[in-house]
Each structure stands twice: as structure tokens, then as C-alpha cells.
Amino acid sequence: MSSPPECAGHAQRGFTLIELMVVLVIVGIATAAVSLSIRPDPARLLREDAKRLALLLQSAQDEARADGRAIAWQPDERGYRFLRLEDGGADERVFAGDPQLRPRTWQVSPLEVRLSSGRWLLIDAEWIGEPARIELSDGHNSVRVVREPSGRIEVQ
Image (tube, rainbow, N blue to C red; front, top):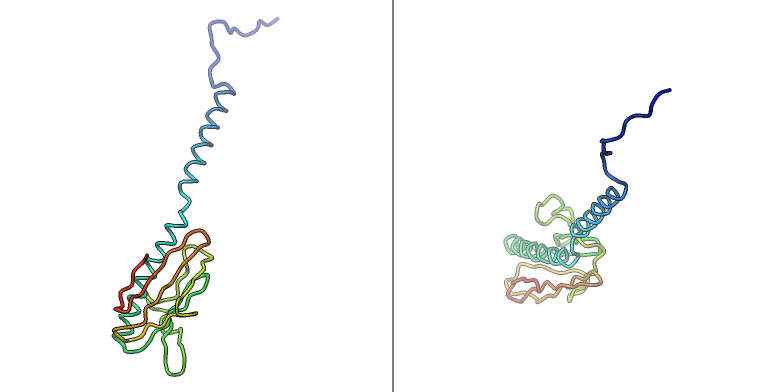
């Protein structure tokens, strides 16, 4: 007959099931906290969209003044584009390859865009232009881009 293995004096090594479960719960809580903090803030993204739009409108205004031809800004819920206005109508291909005035998408989508001037904004070569107000809203947050008669464009 063989004798049972000797266990006296040898403690078992390793973790208990309870210890492993506690570690898994802690890892799960930490992962959830990190994933919640990584999600972008819609209000911040909306404000970034407005700031970028203000800079691009200023660039389009400078382009229209330098070239002497009007540009239209046309938004929708997914993004916006700049169009060159010619005698024969609007040409969207002009800015398709332009690094600044190419078509863009909103970071927050869908986005509601309200213009004081209707469905699109005219950017012409005049030094004193029509004031305009663009309101961007994601349903919870809103921000305005305002063009003053002097041509100054700011985010409010």
C-alpha cells in the first residue's frame, strides 16, 4: 500500500477564488472609468466646429476680397461646403482640392444649422457686408458664429 503524500508543513500556494474575483471587479471598475473619461464631450466638439467654421469663413472672405468674386457657404446636417459663384451659377468643384475651403463634415452629427440669411451665406468682395448669424445646435448645446458688418467673425 502506498502512503498518502505528505502535506504536513507545506501550505498551499496561490490565490483564493474570492481574491481573484475582487481583482476582476477592481479591473472592471477601472476600465469603465477610463472608457467614460475617453468619450468626447459634445459641447466641446460643437465649440471646436464653431471655431473652425469662423476661421474658414474668414479665409473665404479673404479669398473673395482678393479674387473679387463671391463665395457661398452652404451647410447641411452632416457638414458644409464653399461654392464659387459665377455668372452661370455656383461651382462646387473649385474648392474640392483646396486645403482650407474643401467640403467638411461636422464633428457632432447630426447638427442643426440656422442661418439668419436663409439657406446659404453669401461672402462677397465688399469690405462692408451684411451682418450674419449662424447658430449650430446638437439638440442639447448650441453656439453662434456671428459676422459683423465690418467683416469680423467671432464665436459666441
